[in-house]
Every structure is written in structure tokens, then in C-alpha cells.
Length: 92
Image (cartoon, helix red, strand yellow):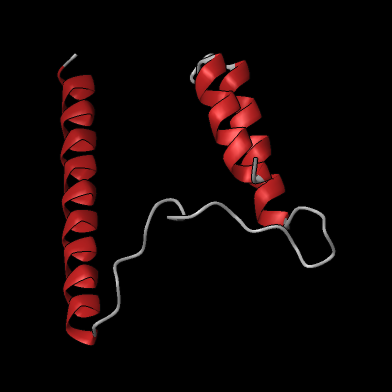
């Protein structure tokens, strides 16, 4: 059993080190962008995707609708939340 514990401990240390390294990298990237005057990247776009010039939906809006549908099917989003976000994307 000591061998299993050692492997688990080693995996936990390596995982913790990876998380810490990622956090430091993200902080450095944020500092560089702040020095350059660029806004930090957002996880989601601040505004809903605009319809394409052809009158249809942009590829980005279609992908976002698909993501919303999946989240709704998985019961992550309520019916109201899904409808509200869908209306934003469709410009209603």
C-alpha cells in the first residue's frame, strides 16, 4: 500500500504545481496586457453576436445557440434563462 500512497501524493503534488504555474502565467499575461493598455480577454463576449450582413446569423451566434441548447438539455439553464439568452442572440 505505501506504493499507492506515494503515487497519489506525487500526482497531487504535480497537479498542484501545474495549477500554480497556470495561475502565475495568467497573472503575468494580465500584467503584460495592462502595461500595453489592452483590455483583458473576456471568457464570453460582452455583447451578443451581431447578425451577419446577409440577414442570417453569424457562425459565432449559431455556435452560442448550440451551446445554450446543450446547457438547457443538461438542466444547467432554466427555461427562462435559456429563452432570455436566446432572445438576446436573435436580437428580439
